[in-house]
Length: 166
Image 1 (cartoon, rainbow, N blue to C red):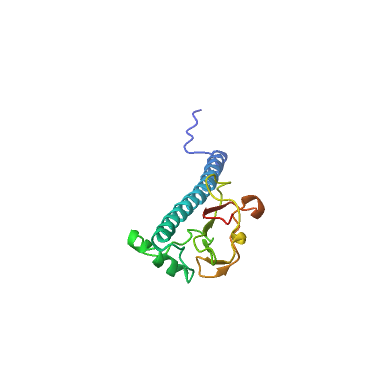
Image 2: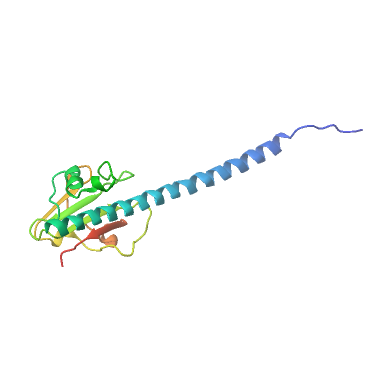
């Protein structure tokens, strides 16, 4: 007798569904890590752009920009003229930090907290607490404590550029 079986059994369908579910879970996990890396890359670029603008301001004015609001810092450094239409904001849920020494006014720090990037070579490791007078502002316009750029002490991966007290 000939068996004219058409279609798949229930077991075969369940195995295929399980394999698809496993593959989609792996894809979502991989995509989440890629998003964190992309936000960290944006943070690095933002801090470097702000450093360039602050250094240009120091070269022109002789002092680092004073802190008013985050938008004032953006305006003072003339980033608007560099093709950026709004003040730089963190791409995730973190805040950027800008600190200036109110006594030695050429010292400043820019800080970004990373999500997934481990210790970054080429950034500053230290704190703005050594400044004679420190004023810090977060990118949400809240005043903040001095920046701590020591990855090991904070337990976070932070990226800092600027001039440390020394």
